[in-house]
Image (cartoon, rainbow, N blue to C red; front, side, top):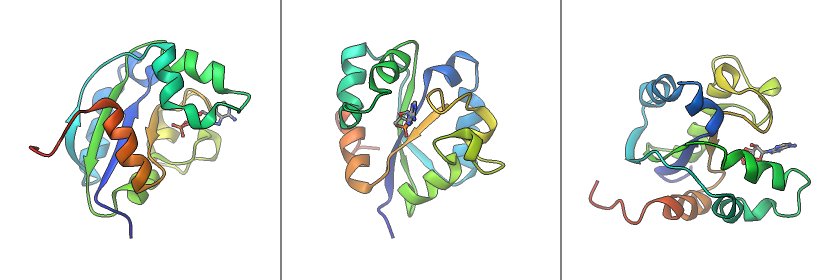
Length: 139
Ligand code: CMP
């Protein structure tokens, strides 16, 4: 069983198309509590830092351009088994493979513009949350 926090961000395609509210509703109805949330925009350099783990991948430069192309909504979420349950809620990275009813099946446009991010481990949830938020202990 994983820990009780995860990190997510609603990506530029979904924010620009006005899906923030609908996605947030799905997140809360699935039992996640929003611990921290803001609307912001990454520079290409900051996007590159966030996705440094993918530096050698052929899609890295496009990914950094895309992730800095518009506003995003990063959040820290809380729920038992948060990392695993959230990845179930968002569905597969490639929306073509995402299950019916998942956030990516409903809102993602492509494997790159896939509407939402979800941390893949407790360790990365903590690292990624700290990338956007200084401290959430008071919430
Ligand atoms: P995410 O899981 O949030 O973090 C890595 C991102 O890289 C992923 O979402 C996609 O947006 C993007 N990505 C992953 N695989 C590919 C791919 N094969 N082609 C283009 N973009 C990708």
